[in-house]
Length: 395
Image (cartoon, rainbow, N blue to C red; front, side, top):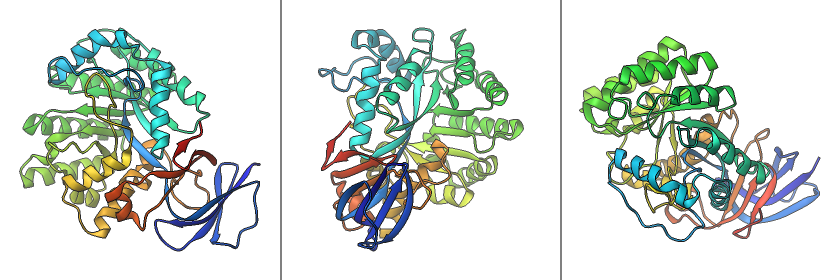
């Protein structure tokens, strides 16, 4: 098996160690300077080492990254953005293998080695977007570990035939199926959720629902999701994306909901937009509600923003929530790394023996320093392969 030695690196800013990697897996950590030579050697120069970043909410099929600038257009509402995207995407070759590959390469440049990506499934593209994303990931030799959520961006019940496409996607390897604002998009929250949970239960896949609705309407749908999760026995397999309403509710109502979500085993993903209400993340931690961070769309027809750097999202989370202590700043980095493991079905994602060798080396003092400066990723190792060297992509 191919072996690689990362010499003289500091996991999370601690004491320097040598990391031995065999067959793409961390096989040993020992004090710096004590390891035997391997087939390949990287001089870590005392750089800080982190686990690879996990992007728990992405849309790698939608981007125009690498193309000439595309001006923002359409109506600035969820429905308006959907309509604009549907009208314009063919003009820009969305979705495509090259587009997805360009986004995945930017993920790698910034240290993301695993992602849970929503991929549009609708009457126009059917399952073509999923095939494109899988082909793009294969072209990078699996350097980015990709999980697929089959995502009905244009609605579910209001578009007859979409449920059949979601069912087919689940049968063909999507790890989750998605939903979108059951109340305001389909105007039938019970109907959409019942249909999604039926497929998920029968196909033994997860559910990941984009939920933008605010206030009591959002809270009502969280309750419907929690009830169906328990009834279907899907604890640990259901996620709410965005979920802006949770941070807007009165404290007593919010606490009640967080407890209900925790009991149902529901997780949460956020992109920490600066205009949203802070999440009750401490209550969520106490209740056992996992939180994942994601970049959402990157330079797409919804927004010109985004560069694929999950560390910037972690810093945005920290600023949105007013985090300042070393412990809290480190927690934000952990959200982007080790705590993202469950969103890509990894039991072991860290700088530990037995973990897939996904490692990011940065010139920083400690994790808080990493967060506030977001320095260049000097080296990125993905599955034991060096994919970024001295800040430059090698794939």
